Length: 515
Image (cartoon, rainbow, N blue to C red):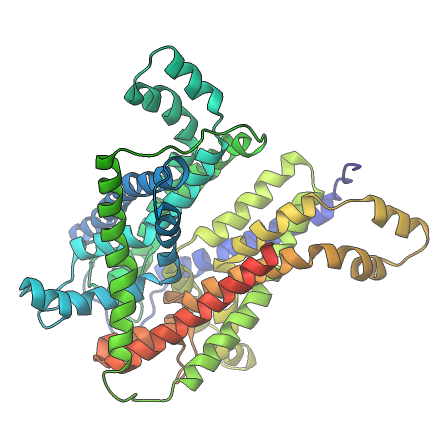
């Protein structure tokens, strides 16, 4: 396969400017809010002590979630790859299923379960409310553990067996092999997964809002409609935590890239001891009970607990429209950098790729706040009507999840063969004909995968949707959130089951296209 020609400088410059504008829009809104605070309700005086304590709580929550997820997710990955006992394959596949559940749904169902009159709270005699930092810590651990399991399991598959076999032949104990051989090989995966979980925990809005945990994202949401500089300062503090983690994560991804280059003989799974097997069964069983069985049972119970206050069809249609149109726009915003990165020189690729991941790494509540500040300052007219009618919502969703489409399209573009395209060009075929007849069929699986990944992320998104959705409309995500706030349990259960069914259907299609 001949190397791709480098892209022209004007295209690269235009792409960098475009990505810079995309990344800069929320920050432009924050800057406007700092310079000229605007709100419908006057804000209380700024309290630096409250702001700093909120920031420290956010950081402590992220560190706690990352530490627990590293231990639990790495253990699940080890069981999945290195151990074999009856039911181990099924159990470790089930431990990834909680990715289907949005954090706000998991928080809402567990809060109802552990309430004094809930099934768990009543059985165990709980009297207090299931809310605050510790419940938020538990929910985010349940949500983020599958990310660590997937990343570490992929790294374990790539570790060669020769190093471990040589260490054991020299008389090294199991603990020494773990510390001297396994840990150095897994260090990039562990570092990247820890940073990924920390970014997730810092940026999460749904779980902390449902559980009333006073962290930066929830406090920022509380101050969105008020004047004063509290909200933009919280946004800047959140950026100060998140953006360095994204930059470090990108560096760790590059340092661990060689793991996937060569296919080597891996260590064969072994049968664990009785104590190891019991430990695995207890930990996996407890995790699945809290992260999968209990939320699903609560959704079913709530769905049949009474009458709906409003039909489900309109939120369902709104969610489908947001997923479809937002997915298409995300495919465009993520596809443009992917096409330019694969056609550019190595020195230019890193900047384009970094801009794409920075745009997607900005927390959803911060994206929504920045775009909302811009919309409030638009003059009355068609442009503001378009913004309030859902255009900024679609743009915010596409900006937030552009990396999903980018990650799906980049490998397909890198492995695309130039020979048929050059042959068609030599025969006089136009660029459009070459694209439709040669390139599009080969890129269709990647395009569908990018669209479905974006669709799944968009239909589960809460902060951008709840802050930028046109007045009078609701999606399944916002209906779940509102139903929990208003104690409409039937609405919560039916909306949750509908959303879960939609996500599972999209994931089934995604698996089909990945084959």
